[in-house]
Image (cartoon, rainbow, N blue to C red):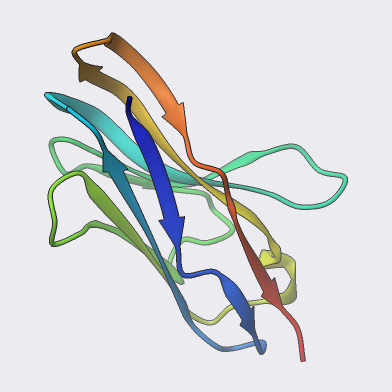
Length: 120
């Protein structure tokens, strides 16, 4: 079965940095896009950053210039470098993979989420 596993969340002071990583495991033939979403308490889940298989990226306005999404060194991984973090970045961050083609067909997957807390 395909799984997405996130790592790298934690507590950081305002202005600090964190790096999130996500690895898709299982028998995977291809992935159309991978990205990060976040959900703060009482708010809807929102897109943070996405990278396609072709390398195109898209960012939420609120993080553009501070966050950078990139493919990890290992296959089927994606990283999110978060700099100049603000308290309003506090949320559970979810890894998302769109269009994973596997022996089970093609579908989208979500990770379990990792908490990012920005506080002094």
